[in-house]
Amino acid sequence: MTYNSGLHLQRPLPDESIDVRSLPVAAAVTLGASLFAQTIAPLPGKTDDHSALLCVVAGRVVTASDGTPLKSARVALVPEHPGSRRQMYAATTDNDGRFLLKDIKEGRYEFFATRPGFVDQHYQAKGGEKGATLSLKPGDKVKDVLFRMTVAAVLTGRVTNDDGEALVRAQVVALRAPSEDEIEDDVLLASRKEPLVPVSSAQTDDRGQYRIFGLKPGEYYIQATDSSQPDFVGPIDESYRVQEFLGSEYASAYYPGVFQLSQAQSVSLKPGEEAQADIPLRRVKTVEISGHVLGRNGPAKDAWVSLEQPEEAIVVMSHQDSTDEKDSFRPKGVTPGSYSLVVYQRREHEDVYEPQARQKIEVNGENIDSLTILLGLGATVRGRVLATGAGSPPLDRIYVGLQSVDDGQQFGASERLRKGGTFEIPAVQDGNYSVQVSGLQDNWYVKSIRLGASDIIAEGLQLEKGAAAGTLEVTLSSASAELEGSVGDDDGAVIGAKVRLMPDPENPYNRFRTRRTRTDQGGHFSLAGLAPGKYRVFAQSPISSEGKSYRSEPKTITLTEGDHKTLSVVLVKPPD
Image (cartoon, rainbow, N blue to C red; front, side, top):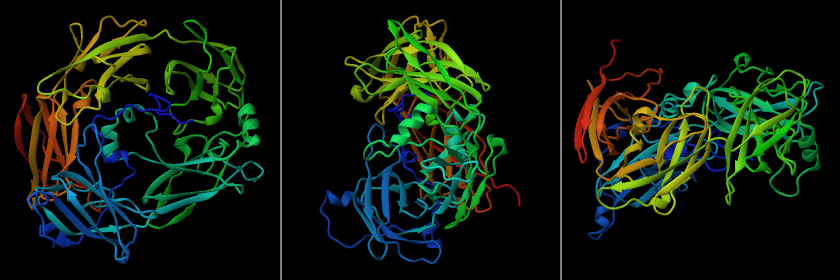
């Protein structure tokens, strides 16, 4: 079973502006000098009046090392701001590495190439950057795009026990430090003690060996856990049933075999390199934790109990259990440490589990007996969504969610709107929350969120003693604003510059209004669906091969309903 911490076990909170980052894409394109002065030229073929408005993009995909054509690479265009729906144009390269994308609508697109064994790469990217947006006007014909793809790296090794014996089906995870973009996008990373991002994972085979492939060059930490998860094909292995009952006798470890991430060593990977990292797991004294889960109407059957360590990169599968017919849980094989015992309960008539209770416990080598966890003591947050302006948004695609902004907490929950635009989020624990709306179309924005006289976007939602007085009223509007502009420096237009628009002042409750984009091949950017208000705008140059970049001074802009403003941002290079 997998889950998104703080949301649902099987369904994460939808993203209001789903972008290409939801794909496993890391940007690193190297282009020929001619591309930086790329020309728009017609491709052969006759078109009628309608097709003349559609665009064509063509080019090649080759290896970065020697320019060898790459057959069967996949090239895709994804709208920069797809809103509630995702649209993609994609093609596969031929024997000469050539691709052709046709019948493309005008717009701004994330543009990237991907192929097994190589690092996913973005249009006009440098190093590990995401690259530039591709901007297409009606009838544009863009040819001679060149992607130079870097061979991916591999992590391999062996996981063993104290006696040097192989540990079979151990879970091994490669982790890395988050990028600057990821830190800016994820407010949860700022509150984590060890902000590492899981990149890829593998299970050990019958020889205790693992192999994690497709890695971008860089620094990685490696974590191994004796999880013994079963195969998803065929009958469940009896050895898994036994370990699930007994728990593991081995503590999770980081390379080169240490318990704490602060003691771990990173592994540096170069393009195409295969590095070996063996990890020994040591036997430790483990304990058993037992208790009961009680709901409002008595024993809580089929609740899911998970022991989680906030500083850990992954959740240990053997530290989970479900309640039986007597509402009892009994995780075994728990190693010493500080945990949060989180109880998830299945939502009625849905295969979705939500966090319902959390209790901190300390494990010091002795069994913990007779814990009692009470469910259903949180608040039920009720509300409705109203729409103003032209048209009506598709309410059946809209979710309203709560996200904890308290330090160290990752609670959250979301609900799809019911008929009539109402929603109800049950069993929300005491705390401080931001309210977020996802699934909106491009031109719609959240105009206001109020609870009585309280402005939730300014003050947040405070829940105390399980009480939520009143009804949340969320107002949407189609009278959004647009901002276009350009980024340049002393040398002219800056291609692939990062542009960030932030509410002024910014707080944890209005952060969902922060928007990010990149300049296109002409140094231009565009942001639509903006809420009226005051903003600060920053721009940053792409990171150079030496790891350097430079920022602009912040510019302040005020947008009103229906505004369409332009802004020019100048980057000042630091002295050499």
